[in-house]
Image (cartoon, rainbow, N blue to C red; front, side):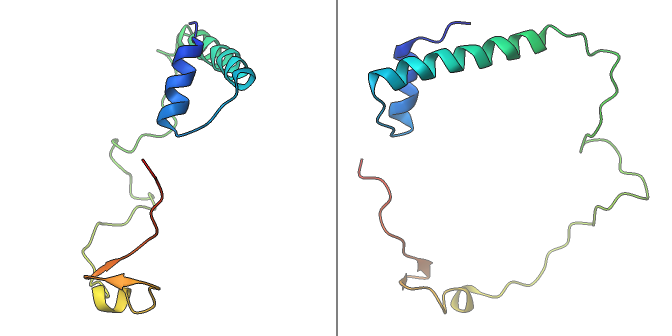
Length: 99
């Protein structure tokens, strides 16, 4: 699979990254190598390989999973007691993105 520089620029823009032309060329080549390797892995026949772990299977009695149980919370007032800028029952945080 060939990753184009246009696709790298698009992903960089979505991630709010500023990349130089050299970095874009390097990222395109590196991502292309990664996807080529994943493509080779997809060619392997794994039909006879038993899954090593799967959360959807029934857990046996020695499993270390606990039952889901609702627990009493601490309440919003206690949670906000040490917040630097609480407001309106919420944590106020500085703006992260300018867009």
